[in-house]
Image (cartoon, rainbow over all chains, first blue to last red; front, top):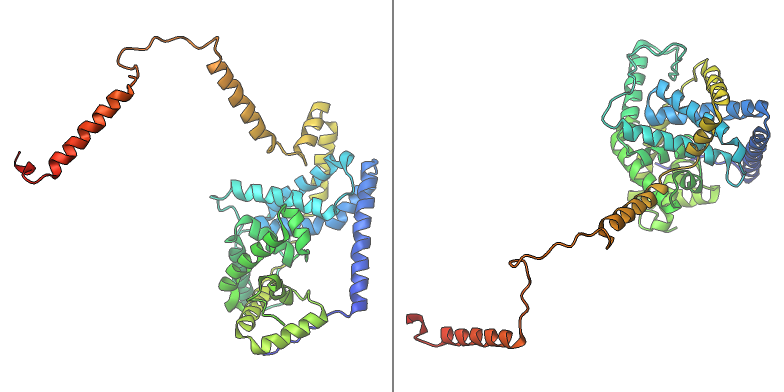
Length: 209
Length: 162
């Protein structure tokens, strides 16, 4: 079966690239202001990156409370290091490097502990679970839960670095070079990590279509 | 188009196709290739399945008090002593990892120096049994000759009866 995939036209691509460059410059500018003691700029940075960092960490450690704890540590480290900040690399690279290191350390330390919260458990206070469709029937919800659980388990089987590479590639839409900088490895090593990870996932998730 | 499965330098096309990161021209070329390549077609459909499955895993909404807790931690940090601040700054982006092997090497060298420095090494007299005997060249020669003789004896017929 021929798959037809709509692609953005070149003009759209240029606009997207310009937007991302502007976003990067904005991050660096905000961080430089934070360095100079502007706490409002830190609040803006937090607003821009809170959700992506928490989502990434949640998918890495698969526990909301721990993901938020690690995300707080990420932003706290950003704040602590503000005085020495130099805009030599992308702000998001630095941010995700800290987040990845914290998550990998957590995974390494808790390898033998099954600490993830189950869907059947009551979520912690103030936590809102996002399921795809709240207006679905009970059967649809059950199916969705089972599917969701399978995805989580499939991701959980991946080694830490492969998991981080997949999550950054899939959900953060990072380029190979960007992922390579975050993981401190070569671009070809990232491609190799991704190939192995997706191979594992293909075996485990292929039946889900 | 060269088959991306067979050429490693084009292998990322397979991943980028599902991620919709290919340019329109490369997408069209790859789709033409898919029509004739069973292996790539199988890979692409499997990858598409994974991609769709992962799409359904949505993120979570951060807790309402996330910012409050973060700012409380920042406040604690600001109020902590200067030593804690310096320590936490160095424990942030700075890693102790590269320093550890160097420190270990220094400790090993120091220990080796203390143990084997000439002034501290006690002189233990060698016991008679532990002395290494020096062999003279003639002695070695004689032994080799004896061995040769024994070899010749064992190879001659009738030596078995001796």
